[in-house]
Length: 271
Image 1: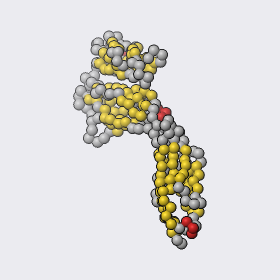
Image 2: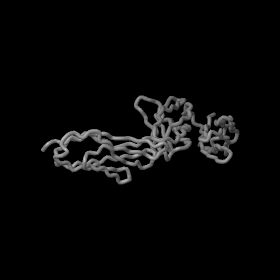
Image 3: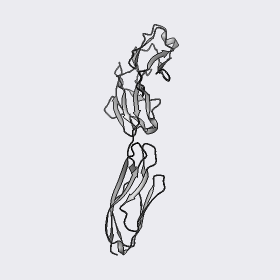
Image 4: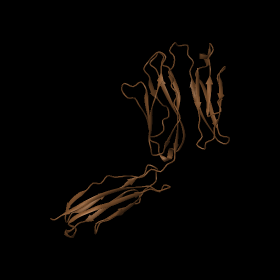
């Protein structure tokens, strides 16, 4: 058997790779480009010590990270599934990343995909009619960094056999404009009290600052400083007519700061 281990460093350094607890006869070679190759042909009787847990370590000279792979040796004629290469990807926090991942089974069995440790916000989607699995993730600013996400494919053999791989993804920091509650044009009769909740939230994790422009005479917009604001207005006959381009603005605290806005009209009718 042979597979490739991938590692990356957000600082741009090419990590040094090593392996620990190699089974007898196995080898691991650092390819010098952030990848390493594990090679092993189990000898007769190797199933006695199975399963084998092999640790792979990546270091940049000051910090290290380690992941483990479990290798099962069996005398069964049912062979484990094997994954096609899963390429390293980058995504900016607040955006999404999605792609298909494919494994094949030597016996042609249908496969069940799973992951023992999906990050928060990630999921595996099995679309009907597809033998591949779809990986989807919308990371947040709290998840910025390098991720090695394990994925497993299990066949329907007797006994079932599993193959594993790693989904390598780097989440980059990036500012995303705040999201806002929807608001629509409104028509009221003079004398009506208008009360609209217009709030905002930010996928980067901070609380947007809320402001208002072009408020009608006597109207107010008040923020609770936690991302929620209320537009209130006690109308009267002096307000009869169209009040256009009322604007609520949400601004985050990124560098540079980004804003979103909602613009709406209120028409006040004669009683």
